[in-house]
Length: 90
Image (cartoon, rainbow, N blue to C red):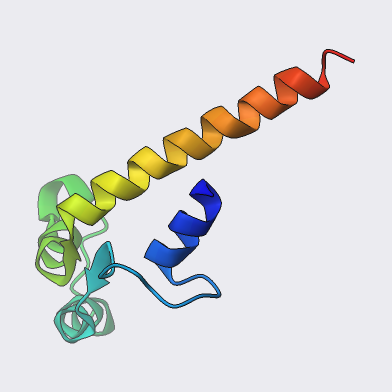
């Protein structure tokens, strides 16, 4: 059942039941690409920080849905590990 709930959140083969847990605003990424096309990359990420700044603007995380999805994945992992331990007892 947990796997079906995950599919419903992520829209994997079935209709989404929740808003996306992550949204990427592609219009904001144009500035990221222009930086590389115009050879402005310093190849020193610690000094520059351009990519991180753009990603902070472009990537929007839906915290409640993300937290719920993380919870569901942990439940799925528990379930899968439990099944492995049970099948290993034979």
